[in-house]
Amino acid sequence: MKLLHIDSSILGDNSASRQLSQAVVQSFAGADVTYRDLAADALTHFSSATLAGGEVEAKLSADTLSEFLAADVVVIGAPMYNFSIPTQLKAWIDRICVAGTTFRYTEAGPEGLCGGKKVVIVSTSGGIHAGQPSGVAHEEFLKVLLGFIGITDIEIVRAEGLAYGEEVRAKALAGAQAKIDSKLFAA
Image (cartoon, rainbow, N blue to C red; front, side, top):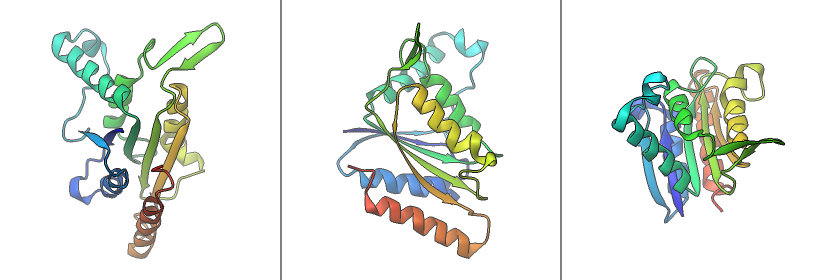
């Protein structure tokens, strides 16, 4: 099984999403893992320059897309920044959403071309936003986007309220770790 591990937190070793995404990856014992750290090795943001960026940009886009297409499982560390995903993660999404490759438009509407993949979103936030209007541009955005490209096997490992004090943080992290340890999504 090929697994693509994406981290997008800018907090390095202090990142809850990085800690939890690593635990998720470890729960897929024996997987062939490709790792991409979007904070340490940031992709350029989509622009006219990236479209006409020459060989370097074309290779970066092709490599990013190839990693995604080759993966059976994708683990995405997705902390919430200002009610949304990190811009680094959005830049990665812009590289993998390619008309004719990961989705296409038909007379009946859009069709996702990436079915059969499993995605585990490791969602972290300082507040409590899941199921709230403030969470629409975070987890909900990722689920809609992944569905658009044909991925419906999506699990969320969530730790929220991380800025509500040590007791709430510890409980949230323990709950997320318990879900990881249950390996319900690793099958």
